[in-house]
Image (cartoon, rainbow, N blue to C red; front, top):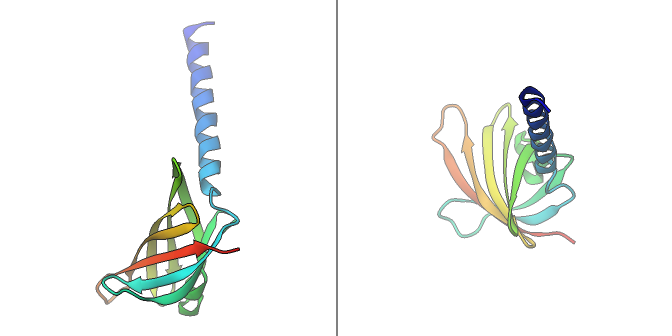
Length: 131
């Protein structure tokens, strides 16, 4: 095998590995629904929330009343923990950037809300896997 053929083969294998890893990461949490709450940073209690992972999308259902809907998420497994991120949008209420972890039956993380004309607000979220 020539050097060029070896190089082309190696690049092809690496591209397939990257593609396969990306597809796995996109739907890593699909089929999971967590019941929990979100609250403003510094407060100990918050509002009820349901977090749904389906078809490569993360959807915090209680946020629908503010015009937010589900959005694609990315996820990466590290041992027994899955780290994920998503960015949801509302025409009237701005953007929410979600960063969290799923470990065992629990979900937890932070969300930053930005909206034109107001200072950013930070929230926390947590929940347990639904049955």
